[in-house]
Image (cartoon, rainbow, N blue to C red):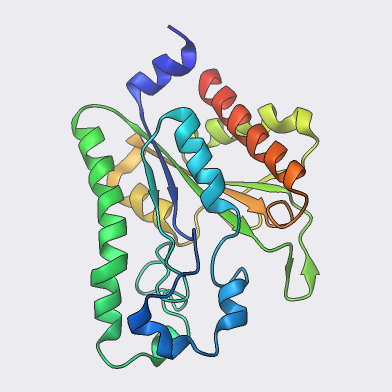
Length: 239
């Protein structure tokens, strides 16, 4: 049996995309009438992340959890206490709307993923969770030169090993791959929450893709997605 198949028989692989679209449901649109530019930008969603996540899930035959509701309504990758969980537009909704948003979108998404992790662990199968994101190439006037960011908790050996193997597999692409950049893997987020809940049998990785790829040459973007999927598969085999 191939090594990757043996690994995935022992582990549950999950793919997710929390910022896959910029949709605002009709009942909330009045608060977003001035948000057109923000919704179309990196503030509204992660361009390319949904396509990458879907292709990873299809290729690796993994369950895919995703949302196409804009992060400006409620950010599924933030804890409820985080100041950016609700944007300034969402804070303009009528009283009680935040509770409605959490009940309609936030908890159903996060609980579905948590339940899948919990079921796998009860069956004795550790979980590898890959969360797909993208980042703007320019923020606050500063250019970010990273092509691919691999985010993880350096204190967790399995996460560090998987990201090291993935970065090694990507070396031949000449992409600028950095670990825990442009964000720290221990920052507030869904993977951070799941680590705290489920312990060392949960392996949570975030991949961050520079948005210059999904917004640029379609051929180059297609090649990048293929390289990421092939290299991630290779990294899984190497463990």
